[in-house]
Each structure stands twice: as structure tokens, then as C-alpha cells.
Amino acid sequence: MFEFGAVLFLASVFQGTLLYVSIYALVRSLLVALLSSWLGDVVDRSNRLAVLRQSIVWQRIPVAVSCACFVVLLASPESSLVTPILFLVVTLLACAEKLASAVNTVAVERDWIVVISGSLEIPRQDLNASMRRIDLICKLFAPVVVSLVDVLSTKVAVWTTLGVNVLSVLVEYRAIEQVYKSVPGLTRTPLPSETAGSSQERTTPNVMERIHNALAPWREYVSNRVFLASFALSLLYLTVLTFGTTMTTYLLDTSFSPFQVSIMRIGAVIAELMGTWAAPFVMNRIGPIRSGLWFINWQFGCLAVAAAGFLFQDPNSQSVALSLICGVALSRIGLWGFDLSVQYLIQENVEEQNRARFSTTEVALQNIFELLSFASTIIFSSPEQFKYPVLTSYGAIALAAICFAAYTRKERGHLLHMSKCLGGNKIRPSFNPANRGGIRFEVT
Image (cartoon, rainbow, N blue to C red; front, side):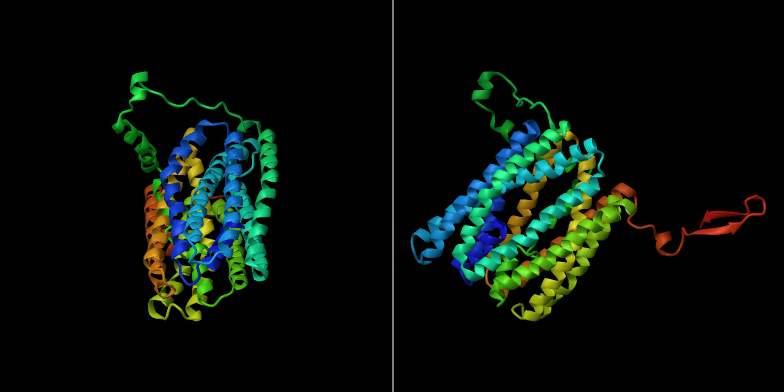
């Protein structure tokens, strides 16, 4: 609710420009990129329940204070001295919220799910898809609620967002404890922090050693066998081709109402839900590597028309905006199918003691690419220039498809069974007189 609502609130305060929304999102991404690897090490070494509870609280407090700031911003004129100060405060609070959200997501999706699926003997691809489905259903209803209330009053929408977030923390705090107590495998003894050298060395730390320690998660990440798959997924964050901050602002500036944008987002979420049902089905039949290859190419193909529209037509025309909406909505099937395929590969190939560290390094990389996408909309901040971020995003998807193709070839030795594609390797019955059964099956 806050993710979508914050965009509407900023668009109401700073009308006719993508600049402030882009700065807001860029600073959030930058801080997560800088700190998430360190947080991953903390998650790997700490009590699972304590970490998750803290992440819940530190998501909700910044949201509550941000909503209070938005109430003041909406009542203040844009030229007021208090406006830039409150914008800075809201941006810094958003950084804290996103860091806590990253910890929460990594802990649940890359660690808890692996333990729970093993303990309860649930197929992991089905549990991954179910968890993602819950998340997407929330993203389906929350924007509708915010936009419907926003039609009445933006200030009322802010207070509604505040109330829901404050009340939900009590439910989340209790529910996560129930899950933790239900699965004994989640209990683990916190590991001590690594210390090295004498007390004298600790009081006067070596700068090179600090740099070495800071780079260690990145070296481990790059050397892991699923690096190319993870890197391909991270590249998809260098995009404005999503119903997120910048595209929502662009659509609002292209004469679409908040309610219309929320309806479009519903269509996109329905497509995303289809992806969460398709992913386990496809993975069960052709495996996570081949399914990832098919899903990323589906995403690439669906966005071709949207990219071409921005290349050859007026970016402010509603026909271009509609081709963008349709292309983005259909591409979400491929996006979440690919996401779940890569998530399964990472869960399979990263050791338990390094799961959070690997995943938060991946989150840092994702935020670097997200930062670049917001930088592109800061440079090209007017709606008329939106085509440049769109084409950059499409290039990133093309590069992601190439990286995952390289990973597929490395793991399987080939991309496609050409003999199958050309009609070979078909199973057909044949008669063998020497065989008393009469009919046998042979592969040709």
C-alpha cells in the first residue's frame, strides 16, 4: 500500500515532473546497494525469529513517520521552505524502510522457505510460487484501495495508509512467531562474529583489511556457479517497464487518472499471478534452467512492440502508452516465471551458511541497476523524454537474456536440442521379428 501510495503522494505534491520521484527512488536504491551485503552477514549469523521481527518493526516505523510528513507536505505550498526539508526526511525514512524490507524478503524467500519445504516435505517450487502469489495478491488489492480513497482525498489516502501499516505490525509480529514455533528446523544457534588479530590490531584496524572484508561478499558472489543466472535476474531491475514509481508517474502525466492506473496495475498483477502458476508447472516438466530460458525470452518478446512504439511514434500519444501498458502486463508472466526459476536455482546451489550473504549481495546489485534506472529518469525527467529510459530498459532485458543463455550453455552444454527442434529424437513404434513382444519403441 505504501509502495504505490508514496508515488501518488509525491506526484500530488510535485506535479508535472519525474525529478522528485526519481531522486526519492534513487537515494533508496543507493543506500540499499551500499549496506545490504553487510546486513546479509548479520542475517546469516543471527537468530532467525529476532531478525525477522526487527525487520517488521523497522519497516512500519518509517512508513508511519513518512505518512505524517506527507500530511504536512500536502498542506504546504511547493515554494515553502519546509517542503525540501520534509522531502529529504521522507527520502531518508524510505531508505530505512527499504533496508528492512530487503532483510525481510531475503530471510523469508532464500532461507526460511528452504528449511520449511524440507521439514514439511513440500515441493519447494510450489512453496516459492505460493509465497509469491500471496505477495502479488496484496499488490493487487492495495493500489485499488489507495487510488479509490485518493479520488476522494489524497490526505485521507495518506491517513488510511498510516492506519493499515500500524495495525498490520501486530498481526505480522505474532504470525511470524507461530510459523517459527511450528517448524523446529528454523531454530539455530547464532554464530559469533568473526574476530582476528590482537586487541591492538582491533583498536587500530587496517584499512586494507576493511576493504578486503567489504569486497569478500562480492568475490563469493561472482565465483558462485549460479552467478550468471543471478546477474541476469538483477539486470531486470534496470527498468522503467514496470508499474512502479517512474512509469506510474509517466502514465499520470499522460492524462490517465490514478484509478485508471490502478486498474492497469491490476491487469499486470493478474498476469504476474499467471506466471506464478505457470512457473512450477513448467519447471516440473523441463527443469528450472530451461524454464528460465523460455520465460526470459517471453518477456523480451512481449516488450518488443512497446519499445518500437517509443522509437517510431510520439511518446506522449495514448496509443504508445497503451502499447506500453499491454506489453508490460503480458511481460509479467515471463518476469515472475523467470524470477521463480532463478530463485529455485539459487536455493539449490548456495550453502545454508551463505544464503543471506549471497542474496543480499544480489539485492545490492539489483539496487545498483535500479539506481541506474532512476538516474536515467533524472537525466530525462520530462514525460517527452521517457522513451530514452524505455529503450535503455529494453536493452537491459536483452542483456539479461544473453547472460542467462550463457549460464544455460555452461550448465547444460547447449541451448536447444536441435535434433528435437528439427524433428528428430521422436519416439516411434517399430516391429522387430526377433522380439517376441512384437512391438518395441525406439528413439530416432
